[in-house]
Length: 386
Image (cartoon, rainbow, N blue to C red; front, top):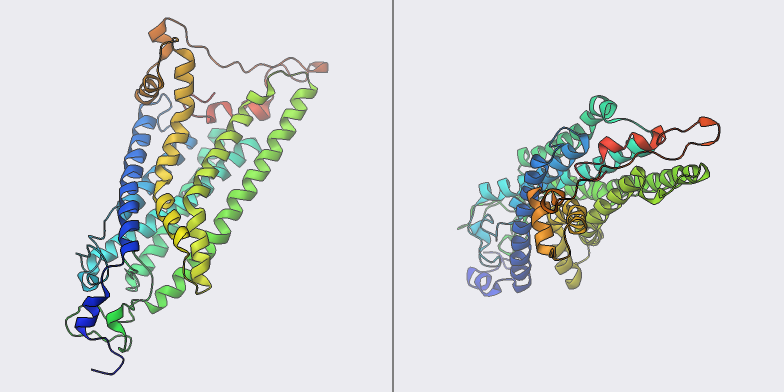
C-alpha cells in the first residue's frame, strides 16, 4: 500500500456523514409526499370535465409524470447507493446497477420537469400574447412543447448512462467523478481490493453534467420562464387598458388575467423548487462548498414541486367550493368537494353559474362580445378556471 492510501480500519473510522443522513431522510420523505400529490393531480385531471382533451391539462399531466419519476428517484433513503460506500454513506445497500437506475430516473425526471415548466409558460404566451386557439396550438405548437422536454431529457440521461458516467455522489447518484475516500492514492480506472467500482469512474460525465446541465438549469430555464412571464404580464396589462377604454367592467377577472395568475403561480412553484439547488450548483461550478443552510433548504424544497403544483391546481377549486357552500361548510369539506370533483351548487340547491363572456359594446360597434384576443383563452383555462 502506498503512503497516501487510507487503510481499511481508518476508512471505517470516517463514519457516517450525519448531515447527509438527515437531509437524505428529509428529501426522501418529502419526495413521497410529492409523488402522492402528483398522482392525485393526475387523478383529478382525469375526473374533470375537460379530462386530457386540452393542451393545458396535457402539459399538467406531463409535468406530473415527470415529477413522479423524479420523486421516485429521490425517495430512496440511500437503498440504491452502492454498498462500497457504506462506511461513510448511511444505509448504502445497493450496487452500481441500482445507482445507475436511480441516477437515470433522476436525470429524466428533473430535466423533463424543468423543461415542461418552460412549456407551460410558452403555451400561456401563445394563448395570451399571440391569440392562438387551442386547436392551432394542439396541431402546430404542442408537439414541440412535449417533444423538446422528452427528447432532451432522454438524450442527456441515456448519454450519461451509456458512457458509464452515473455514480454515487454522497448518497444521490448523478454524474460526479467517483472519488470516494477509499480511492485516495489510486489512479483512474483502478479498483481497490475488496471494492467493485473503479476509481475515477465518470470523469467525462462530470464535464457534461456541470457545464451542459449547469448552463441549462442556471441560465436557460430561468431566462425562458422569466422572459415569457414578463411578456405575458405586459400583454395582459395592455389588453385590460384597451378593454377599460371601451367601458368594460370587472377587467381584473378577464380570462387573460386568470391565465397570468396561473402562470405566476406555477413559476413561483419552479422558483421554490429549484432556486436553492441552482445557487448550490453555482457554488459547485465555482469549486466551493455548499453552505449548510443552503444544503438543507435545497433538500427540503427540491423534492416538492409535485406538491406545489397540486396545491396550485386545487386551491381555486377549494375557494370556489367554499364560496358556493352554505355558511356551515368547513375548509376540509370544501377541500373534499374540490378533490372529489363534486358540485356544491347541486348539494345546496343553488344552480351553477356559467361565466359571462360579454362586455359592453364599444363605440362604433367594434366590440359586441368579449374581444377575440381575450375570448380565445376561455377554453384554455382548464376545468373550472373560467
